Amino acid sequence: QMANQSKDEVELAKVPLYYDRAYQWADQAVVAIPNSVKYLNARAGAALQLKKVDVAKRDVIAALELDPTDETARGLATLMGLKID
Image (tube, rainbow, N blue to C red; front, top):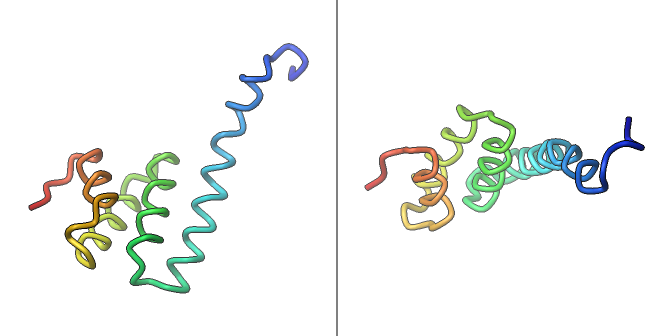
């Protein structure tokens, strides 16, 4: 099957694996440092790509509670349609 796929198609097929790894690493970071806006945002972004919307929302809300001015968290919230002040 892979012989019939283009190089781009093969690379694209790997994308979920990359997001899964990113999610796992960010999850470990959040466990180690739960009040890190940076790590919450990282896990939220990976979760969103993996269609784990509930996890992503929870992490973005937690990040915004820690720092309401964080642009990454605000951008993710907007992307997900969350109401922010």
